[in-house]
Every structure is written in C-alpha cells, then in structure tokens.
Amino acid sequence: MTTVAADYRSRRVIAGGGAFASAAALSVIAVADSYELLLAGAFLVGAASTAMVDTCDLALADLAGDDLQRHLTLQNVWGSVGDLLGPALVVTVAALGLSWRVSYLVGAALVLAYGAWLASLPFPPPRPHQDGHRVGSAVVSVLRDPGVWLVGLAVMLLGPLDEPLLAFLIAHLQQARGLTETGATLVAALSVVGAFAGYATLRRWTSALPLDAGLLALATTLLVAAPGALPASAASLFVGVFLVRVWVDLQARVLTVRPGQAGTVKAVVALVETAGWALPLLAGAVADRTDVTAGLATYAAVAWALAGLAVLGRKSRRRPPGPACSPADTATVGP
Image (cartoon, rainbow, N blue to C red):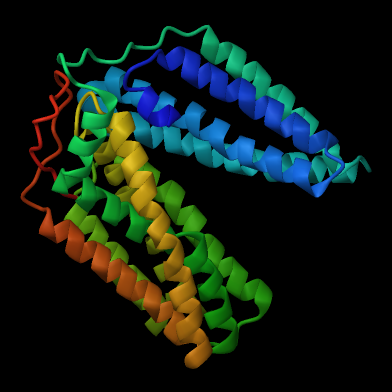
C-alpha cells in the first residue's frame, strides 16, 4: 500500500518513514525475547524496507529521465556492495565475541542515520493526476494493462534464476559432475563476478532485452550440459552477466511503463512476482522424481520461457517519462 501511496503523497515522508520504521523493527529483533516478537519485527522490516526502497526508486525514475538505466546500474552496484556489508558486520561481531543482537543494534543505528539523511533530501513530488483519477480506478487501470502483466511475468520468471538456481547448480556439480562442495561453490560464486561484469557492460551498452534474455537462457542451458568444472565456470560467469543486464532493463520498464503510476505498477508487479515462489518448488519436485540435474534443467526451461516472453514484446518500447497518464490510458508496453 505504501508503494501505491507514493504515486499520490510525499515521497520524502514515505521513504524517510520507511527507514525509521526499519530501524525500529531491527531494534525490536535485537531485544526480542519471544518468537512472536521476532516474527513481528521481521514482518515490520519487510514492510518498512519496501516503503523505503520502492519510494526511492520512484523518485529516481522521475529525476533520471532518459538516463534511468545508467542510474539503476549504479544503484544496483551499490546495493551489491551493501549485500557484502551485512555478512561483514555479522562476522566482525562474532569475531569480537559479542552477541548476535549487537549486529541488529548496529544495523538499526545505520538505518536510522540513513533515514535522517533521506528526510533531509528534496524529493520530486508525485505527478499531478487528472480529475477523477482516484486510487481505485488507477489500480484497475493498471491491472487491465497487458504491458504491466508482460513485465510482471518477466520479473516473476527472472527471480528464480538467481539464488535458487545457484543452489541447484551446487548440488548438480557435486552429484552429477563429481566436484567437491568447495569446488562447486566456487563455480557458482563466479556468477557474482559475472554480475559485476554485467554492470560494467551496462555502462557502455544498454540492455536489449530479447538478446540478453536469450543469452541468459543459453548460459543457463550450458550449466546443465557442461561436462566439467571449466565449462561450468564459464557458463556461471555468463549467467551472472546476463542476469543483471535483464534485471536492470526490467527494473527500468516497471518504473516507466505507466508514467505517474509507477508505484501502482510496482505493487502489481510484486503481486505477480509472488507466483514465481512456486517455481523452485516445482524444480524440487522434478529433482525428487528424477535427479538434481533434471531439477536444474527446470531452471533452464524457465529461462527460455523468459526469453520467449521478451521476444513476444520485442516490438514494444518503454514510454519515455512524461505527463501522468489518465485511467483510460491503457497503451501497452511489453518486455
């Protein structure tokens, strides 16, 4: 709901409030003495961080204009750095012999400071909406837009091709290719190196979704077919490269497919994306009935479905940022 509200209310208030609520949630987890309190803190972290991150994305889309993909690339690089800081904090706290609760208290302090910084920034206001453009009618309009569904389905298919794919890859390399646990993990970790390489390529060449999605599907298929560690390493590296290229393109499309309604679009896409949670379960069921290699092949099939969806929408183009659309404006944009 906060993501939808960002189409109509102050982005600075919502983003800053989300950061402050995240800090409060982390503090709750740090002092929790019951399962119920931990559960409440975890729920609040998810809701509050969504308000903070999604609202900042909407503001970035309004400010970046035609240069959005470059800014999203930089944003994702910094996000990847942040992914490393969390484990580093936990390791440091453990090395000092301190309680795990200290990690959450330090995290809460950092997020609190970040929220104060956000609250001091000038955020672009929501775009003006035409008379009669109510929240309910806006949601209905977005739900009726096939372009939103195409992007949402593409995001849904992309999600399992990250960590869930790597988990199956490690098991496949051990069971079917005879690698040690360490060797298999190192091969899978090359996708992280590939991700940073992918961000570097985006600084020079913007994503062409049908091509990048097709190459991602090909690299995923090579993971299944690779006979040993060396070709599997190359395939893993390329999976990382094209995964981030596809993701940044889709991220930009979500933010621009309906100018003035990006928050509502993000909320709908997030709802569609939850259906993708069943895909790793499907891969697990396939692995249980056959073997882990077949389970990994399920992810290759998902990647090819994503490539097909990208080709389906190849003649469409993202709308450039412009005046907010009316509820009747349902021009479509596919992946």
